[in-house]
Length: 186
Image (cartoon, rainbow, N blue to C red):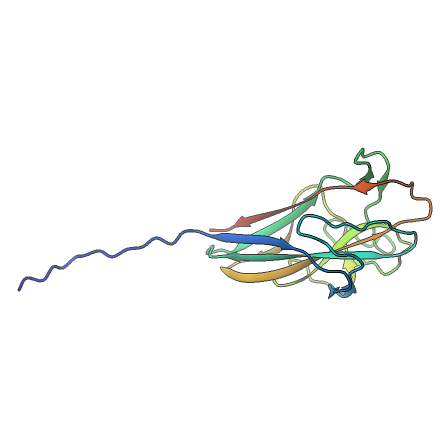
């Protein structure tokens, strides 16, 4: 009998990351508010909005990765919601109540006559967790909103959007584009 010593058994595990944006139905309770409209994975259709009222919507973000050092999810937008996308007439970014927020610091936004468009978040791995109904405007440069420093499975966070307009807002169709970027940290 002659034993064979030194048979190498090996396998390589691929690096993986999975990220999905999901819809949230109308009348759902998320981020401490109730959604006014249903979203899809690619749209947040507020529809026709009236003055001095909040309209709320949300989307879910689900992340799984085997990255040793976790992941980072950032957001940014291409500018304020503008009429026909022309960038001239806009729905202002929120400054929350009493100009208490900016793109890096959330603030309370409880009064619909403080007009604008902004977002808040809740759930797993949310980077900024504040009291309920704290918002901030979207940035034009990437800002981290969700992260984990280790491998993660099925982590779910919600981005909740809020809009309110004045009675003098020019009529028309307003829109902008949000970008979410997921980066694994291997």
